[in-house]
Length: 110
Image (cartoon, rainbow, N blue to C red; front, side, top):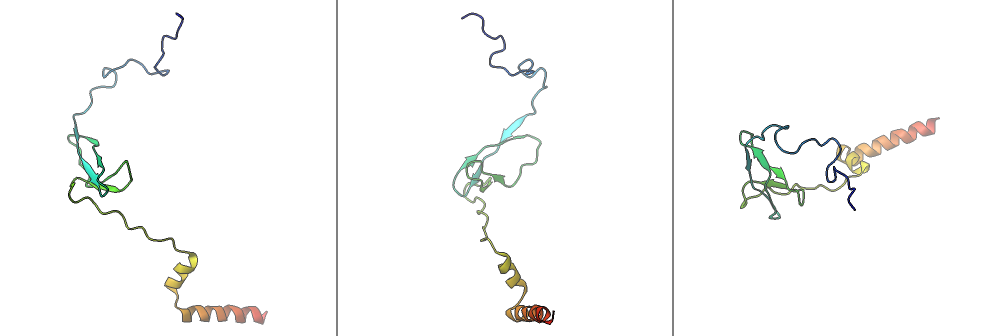
């Protein structure tokens, strides 16, 4: 079959390939970051860019650091709290009983 598309493998509006139209790329350097599970990621940074102290591991999502022997600790995940748990943190049982009694008295007076 001889009548194929002339732009096969390219998207519409892609333009010419190569650096000529986009300009030259900035000089890059690669840094290694390790998470607590031992995964290594090597993102690239411009040579004049400030390197972050932590990087999210693309494999597991844990924080990763530049020191392989001492990676950042995983974040502490706190359990889900119900509305009642938050109320109990703010009010003592004595306060709760007083508020309940006040509400009951108000209902009974109507």
